[in-house]
Image 1: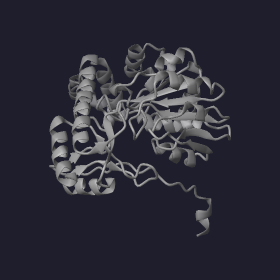
Image 2 (image 1 turned 45 degrees about the vertical axis):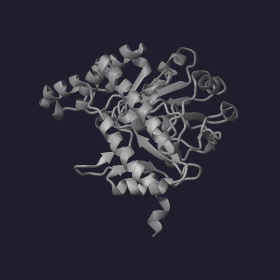
Image 3 (image 1 turned 60 degrees about the horizontal axis):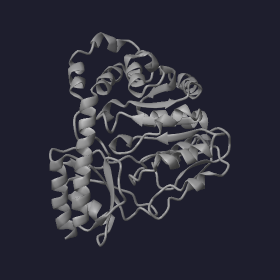
Image 4 (image 1 turned 30 degrees about the vertical axis):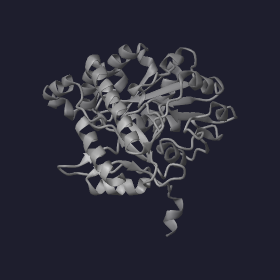
Length: 351
């Protein structure tokens, strides 16, 4: 039909399945298996329902912005809060990658980057990870329109050390470099201190993983005041009222309880370490992960078979039928009980 000629067509991002059922073990979307900080539940009870009829305050003018700025020791003018890190990253693509030159990101990475580039008609080049799934900083020393990569990377979990992160930023000071740190709290070192040195660096984090608030959709970016100002200009041109009242209130409690936050991150790291041992015993190989997941391949059993047979047992992991990674499954770290059920199922499938 003729009207279709003027429609923007993109291949959308494919999220992990969201199965429903009483006995399902869901290890496919990297959600935190533990509840948010106790103060979050207390705050839910005391939410002012009358506030629901009003538009929420602008995120940078809220106690959440104050709590985050205090926690990361930055100015509030260096902070941008959005509806999950996906919203933040999408706006960052729209704002910063407008030169017409290709944006660089890894060939194996968060697949939403390619979707946003296509949606906003931004040219891009995918840089191949090495044979160990590591980013090669030398690949990012060519002229480009911007750089973005997760650290730790997704779906591999591989961490790029801070020195190599800085190599990429230092080589690209004429464009914006975005480091997506969705999983940094599970063992990596944040590049946040580099904000003092580079005004073209944007660091993006989220409440969805380490703070157990994926359902509240809270993400944030940290950078120079100038970068954040440009990001806000685009946000307010698209939608002034972004984060909802409840999310802004509950997010404060999640940030406030630092002890609980560290305990739950450590708990997941301990379970991940045990999972590495169990998976190795069962015949799996995997790169060292610094996320709340393990990217694993079995020495004999095809990944797609493992994925499908686990699903038959109501255990969901993530699988991509893509070049270079079509023999891997990504396994979210669940509770110890969930992981034991996984090991039992894998023993029968791969034994």
